[in-house]
Amino acid sequence: KIQIHHIAIRYPHELQPLQLTNRKCHVAVLGLGQWSLGRKPKNPQKPPTLFPRYHYELNTMMQLVAKNHSSTSTRLVFRSMHFNPLGDFKLTCPPRDHRSPPIVEGYNAIVQHVATVHQLPFWDTNFILGPMWDSAGDFCHYRGAVAQTEAYYLLQQLLQLLLEKDDATTG
View 1 (cartoon, rainbow, N blue to C red):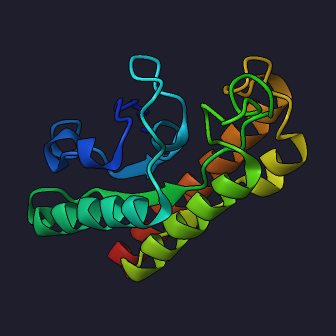
View 2 (cartoon, helix red, strand yellow):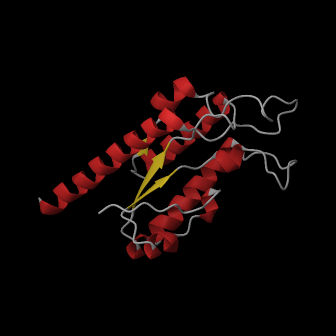
């Protein structure tokens, strides 16, 4: 039986191991970065999280999770950050939203690096979303066939991960 829960966190420092333990999660798929780079509605002048700081925040989050890993058996997986269409606040000068493709690629490289260092899977969905990166009608959220294709891919990856875990347990 697979249950899917959404844990609302916007920034890496907001993830608490207790959130995973309380929900009895087997796997947590982390998709972070949108809020770290995006325009802050309540504080539009706040700058984005720069690459070195974002790397530090992800590493700090992982150290906290590793320190408390005995209280949770949840496997963590990182997924790539989505590209956002240009327009909206990304093309103002200076930009008020920094989620342009080159910057998102930089964030994804950081996430992939942190995942590798901590020996965690990194699920890159950019082969699905990359060609359709500018199709989100609201400049953020993919819908229709694009979203469905990504969801199927993530479900396939999740099932494969769970089967690998079962195979390792049963020997």
